[in-house]
Length: 344
Image 1 (spheres, rainbow, N blue to C red):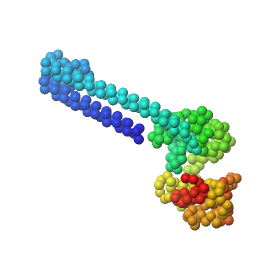
Image 2: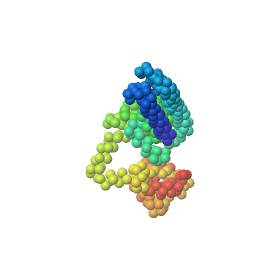
Image 3: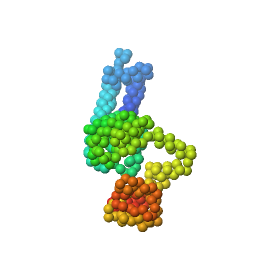
Image 4: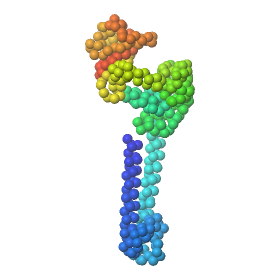
């Protein structure tokens, strides 16, 4: 908010100074014209010379009254010049101090990050990813080597590390050791491979999602250590095909996946991990009766072993460490998290 107020304040001050200059030129032109009887252009020229502190006597016959008026104009001109210089110096100092303390505050915030998402790349994909993560109230930090793109992150109050994301030093500044996941979303597939290799070398078990632009890049990214690879172009093609061939299916997916972002229907799909010694541990889905009690649909169960069981039946057991992939409204999902032993 402060970054938005500063340019407005500077604009107001510049407008005031411009108003003073306009008034001074008007008074000076009228004054010289009245006192000396000069033409309007000669009077304006004399005012310009006075305000610039050169002195005003374009015709070489300035009267005593004109000399007094000229002195007054010079003093007012000096005052406006010093006022303009003061505003300029103040703006520079405020900008430099604001940038300095803003960077220090951001560095302090980044140094406290834990269980956060690291987003490498502040392009279109990275920006959308950041907005989605922020909408879920998850901490994040963006890494980008382009200072101009990093300005977008500052406007949205997202912490940013300016540097090459394939550098170990830069990733450590983003506290990769404490992150819950990393997304490599730069436009270059080769750069994404380097980022994934570096991140995997620093934290072997870190979940890493990478962007792939070319078809052959997916295998390289997986070999480098990416947990998952997403192709925006492939996804866009699949979505367009579903919209044309199965529009109702695509409409349902849009509502289910984007309701949190667009503030529409309160329908969400979340994963809820089952803690030990919670109310659900050891019960079957039928015994837990989640759908009847909460109106939530369990779409799948991911076992602690990594196996994913779609459309589980009432006889399927809920075990500690399982992830319940559930769909329902946000408040009911919070109740499910409480039943699963998650402390809010």
